[in-house]
Image 1: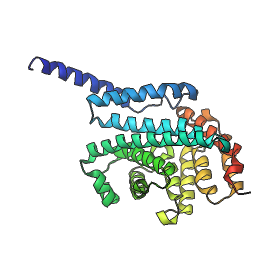
Image 2: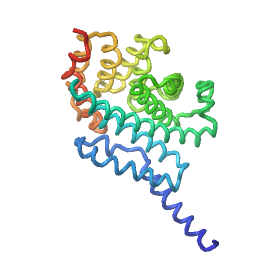
Image 3: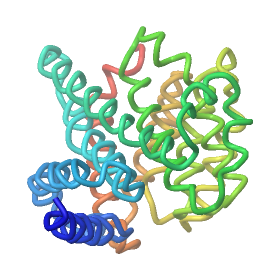
Image 4: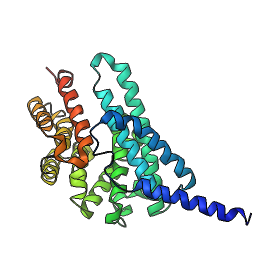
Length: 291
């Protein structure tokens, strides 16, 4: 046993070194201009992350990277594919959305593990009891964890119609997003404000406000200098569609499509995929609005 101990330590050190390298923030994927190449590459990368977590289960940066990876993959390549299908392909679209939901919940699991590592066991119960108080200790360095925790859970809720076990956690999503905004309003070029557009569009019954959603839209566009189609698509799908404002819906999506994806090189892939979603929504606009 004494002889084996150094070998185990070396292995753990090696795994942690790899985990640290892989989980470092970067734009290797997001700056790519080939969505299909990234689509093919991501599953292998995500399984690699999961394999590493078998050896270092409490590696917080890797847990966050795995959460963000599954959330991004589910949105960009599964849910978006479902939205692109015609109304007569309901069964196929439903199967894709069911798969996206599974991936979002899988992502949420990794983020919740990271929350426990950061804030201690029992954080889930504390978040349910009083999410604002539970996040008082959060610092600026915790923003990625707060964002991806909120994004993965929020995406799951948006697809899991009728899942009361998920819907009751909406206050947690808001608390995470608002705490992150308090810590750094401009984090990731307005990503938090894009998230808040979705949160504020949930309706007054859930504490939402269309006026605040539009304020977050304006702030996101300002921070991004109009170089990202994200805020336009988010406002169109969450606010214009809900109010059945077809004219505004079309205007926003066309504004999104007019943006050059290369204008923000580090997020070129995100822009391409978001514009793909915008085109799909315009193609199926008659299915989304009452004639």
